[in-house]
Image (cartoon, rainbow, N blue to C red):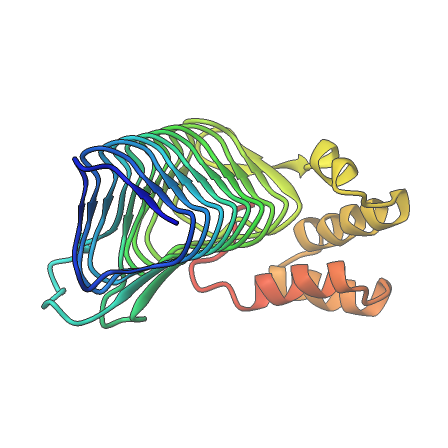
Length: 256
């Protein structure tokens, strides 16, 4: 049975699963689907197009599936998909999609800290930690297990690789490839995210191979020549392939 405060509003067309807690002053709009065992503390707003999984906790002031901050948006029917086991802290805003992709996606097991923003058509993976006041512009992609510290600003269309650590207060105008620490101003490659990789169970052999991949990429002539040297010199493990595919498909270029 759902526990719905008498001070909350739930649209009669909203679809709720079981055992959800909806606190006072929450607002659940039409065309919303919510799974099981979610907690919405007071003053949470769930707008049109939200598709929410199970076991999520939303803290006061969170606003999910908000109207996109995109002047090209014309009211098309789009969605905002949130997976399972997420902690979405105070005043987090997540916009729904536009005609570009049709949906904004947030995976599972993420911690989105206070006052951060997820723009329209973003695709966020799982296992992320995104710090206070970090802002992701439209159509940003963040792969699994990345950590973005506080007050990071990410340009639209950027791609952030998995297992990265991004320094607080950074501005990211380019793609950030996986497994690294990104910091300084302007944003640069600052070595591997060794602590993060070891915590995630990467072996010394895997870490050495990732290190050698970046050594060749960044120190062998052009980026194209570096990619060729990696393919010629190193074994093509899934980690190496991930790095090379990321670099080869980068639309904005990678940080150096």
